Amino acid sequence: MKNRKKMGIAIAIVLLSCFIICSGIRTEQFLFHAWQNSGSMNNERFQSGTELASGSPITMLVKKKKVRAIRKSHVMRNATAVSNHVSALPTEISDKNIRLIPGGQSIGVQLSTKGVLVVGYHLVSTAGGEESPGESAGIRVGDVITKINGKSMRSITDVRRLMHVAKNSDPLQVTLVRQRMVVKKHLIPIMDKQNRHYQMGLFIRDSASGIGTMTFYDPSTGSYGALGHVISDRDTGQPIMVKNGRIVRSIVQAIDRGQEGKPGEKIAFFPENAVSIGAVSKNTPFGIFGKMEKNYVMRSDMDHAALPVAKADQVKEGPAKMLTVLNGNKVEAFDIRILNSIPQKHPATKGLVIKITDPRLLKATGGIIQGMSGSPIIQNGKLVGAVTHVFVNDPTSGYGVHIEWMINETSVNHDYQAIHKKAAS
Image (tube, rainbow, N blue to C red; front, top):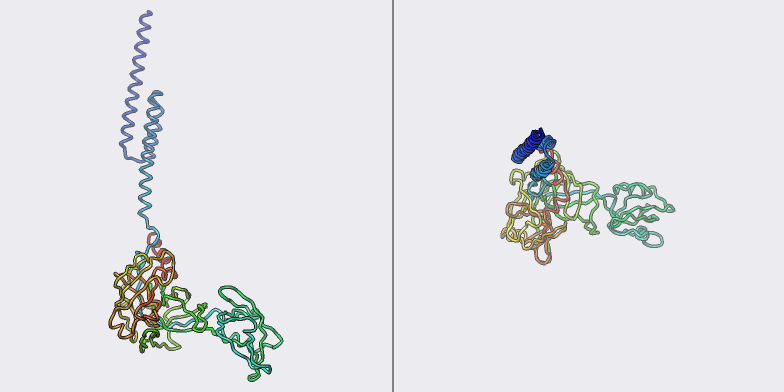
């Protein structure tokens, strides 16, 4: 009887061992299948969790390690897939996405200043001699008067109206802008003994006009850039604070040829009541900027295709083309050479040194002349910059500005990002 019991126990032990071994084999088969399976991560996690509920402690430990390896492998594969997807998405708009129509047209520029600009002193005749109340009050040439007695001075007319009611005993509280600083002065007007009117003893100006060249136009956003340098007052040399302004078409009627020591200029004309083709919203060291009038199409659309733009570090020394007008309103291309290109990392003027090499242009103008400012420069099929300055002692050469810095002053890059996002959504 005892022998039968011992034999039964032995058989039971053998059967249990076989069961454990078979269970381990089935588990290994499952794990191998799961390792090879390329199904979804969630599905494999569910299967692995179910299988961990059975088997011996040793087999459980083996399964845990292998399941962790499976999960780690899938996490890595998923992370790689996400990374590849993100890298395939559109990133920040680069210069490759921006295509602009080069200009070259002669334009007239009309600006209205913020406040009134002091451009000189006027001596008022009195019984005791001549005096300038404005100069005595400490007001300087180049100051911009924005308020008098708390009232905004938007034009010369506003100043005249106030002076008509001014009295000798009443000092004027003058608020002005000087080198971006707000300054307040007290001015006592004096009556001129000849015309019997109280005067401030200041020459003032509220507008400016001139001739320049369109650099680029973006038909998608309506933005434009021109001149390539700041517009300064001719008397004070101070940059004009623009309240508003406009650009108009102008016609080149003649050329005053330049020579060493005497820069030449374009003799151009535009009527006072000329139709506006665009608004001026900014006057910066890199030119004037704004939006073209609605439904306006530059004539260059018919002659020049939109070109990609080059960043400052992409411009090379060597031959290039310049677009400008010599007669009437016909835009022509002329040969120039880029002698030096400074790969500027931050916005700065005079990043290009150029030389006129076109025989016909040299014969007609002697080199770079006034009115050419803003003439676009094209190299290797890209818009790279604009002409800005002439060397007085060598009118065949001068400076240019990188187009990258002009674009930064506009909404072109921002608008292209918005357009790109809208198209992707």
